[in-house]
Length: 62
Image (spheres, rainbow, N blue to C red):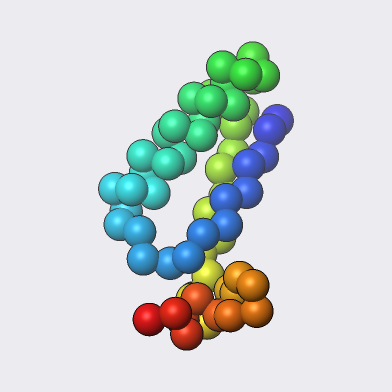
């Protein structure tokens, strides 16, 4: 049972997340042969203040 964890900054619409789950499921099914009903996708959303790159929080980049 493949489990895929996607971490991303908050702000995507429900439609975008729905599309992401579908496309990730399709990719895992195609590449592993696992049936779609056995593929789980977990989306972890983070506030920009909780994520940084190169020593700078994303919330400070605005």
